[in-house]
Image 1: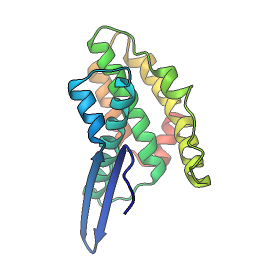
Image 2: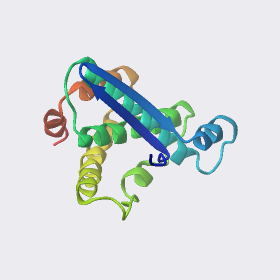
Image 3: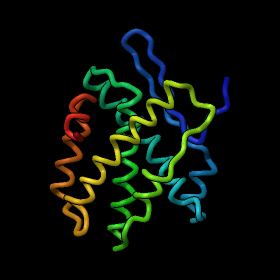
Length: 166
């Protein structure tokens, strides 16, 4: 057994049965619930990404469709952007994290070549889409058109998402 990361989605498939689980480091959950700290944005992003992956897998399983790891990462980046921007908009503040999320990130040197490619691709496409979302639906917030857009994006297959972004 390996020690779980800060956030991990677990998948067990046998025959027609699929079991999914989500692990979030309890320290992260405690900090978010009781101790607002400088790590708030990072902690919130960690939880959001895990929940995003789980919901995406559940949706695809419900539709009896597969998805790639790149799809999970792309949707996770979009969902983190949305959560941070919607929270900032609720507080009547500008989200401080577009640059932090998309321009000042780095890859873990322990990642494999395939993992590097996947994260680099997600970080190539996600900011293009999120920049467009930010431009069209935020400042001022336009919740109903935003909801229509992101629901449509969520249900697209990877090639459709990339076509939509480009």
